[in-house]
Length: 130
Image 1 (cartoon, rainbow, N blue to C red):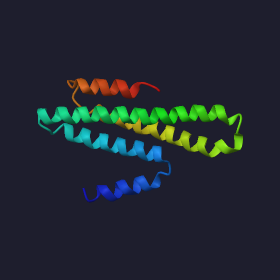
Image 2: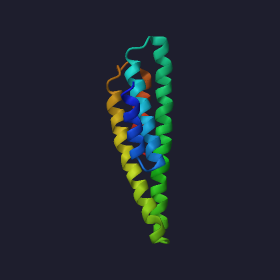
Image 3: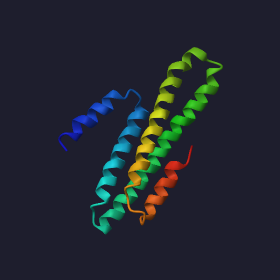
């Protein structure tokens, strides 16, 4: 754990957009919860799977908000070209970054046993485009 915290802090510090940092933190929590799930007793495992489902829901909410901002900014860009360039580029970066994190979360879900109903539900939610 001592090695993880500085690495996590360095990754967060390197992200310039609050939304990208939010997505990164949610993704990291998801990965660690998934690692724990395999070794836990069934009664505790169920609670962790529910927590993972909440993380996925929040992740999709944040990433869909970024995606909507990109579309709205693109439409406004026709009216206010110079003011929106920086915001549009940073939102596009956060949107692309979110898609990469999402793919990583899907790969981690593949490590869970197929018998978990929550696994199927999380995969379905991650695969839905906003």
